[in-house]
Length: 295
Figure 1 (tube, one colour):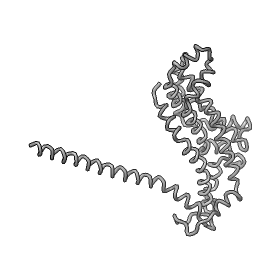
Figure 2 (figure 1 turned 90 degrees about the horizontal axis):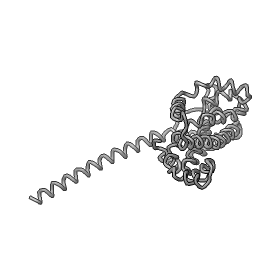
Figure 3 (figure 1 turned 135 degrees about the vertical axis):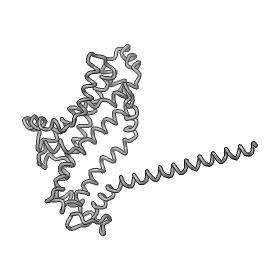
Figure 4 (figure 1 turned 180 degrees about the vertical axis):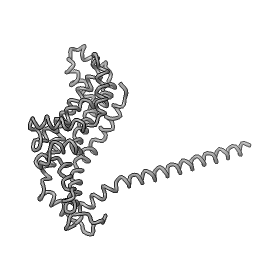
């Protein structure tokens, strides 16, 4: 009797393990399939960027018959790509610096200070953040045009746009600050520290991951912005970012001669963003998970 019971247990355990292995196999297969689908366009862009094609257009071949650096040479010697790249990189750096200051200041204030209308203010910023940004495009263009911050001066105007409403993105940072015990603030205040000293000398040293997360988000934003930049730049090459500049190559008049060069530019643009993200992804994850609390 005991032997039969033991055999049943073994069969049941074996069946459970088999089902588990089959389930894992299907899960891994699905993940591999999703990865292939996700990476396929990037693979195609890289292949196109090294294609030697005298016309520079699309020829329907995924793998080039000949590889070369012709598209990269054209990119750096015959276009304004370096100007666009410099503009975007500078916008990314300044946006990251100013946006980090605004976001962390707002987040710390909402986490620690209690004042009238605090909750309504948080709700208002949450609601405003749900409105599409393009609703304000015409007003932004009018104001910045009067200030001379369009066309060649558009990078300055774009940094202002990116930073102006950045404080409304306080949710994750505030959640992170909520996890830091308030007793640390109180102890520092008892020792005579001001609110500003508590923020910079006590809280900031404990907030490395959320600081780097905020810097990363601020730096990456300008690289992918198209709509706001298109409005302010208005076809002035000296003020273009990479998104607007590269878009000009995809017009009907240019796509048949500039498509492979467009792919080369895409690879070059992806390098700094990918490198920064890979170097800081540990802090990105820590910042997101550390701020994923309700406060």
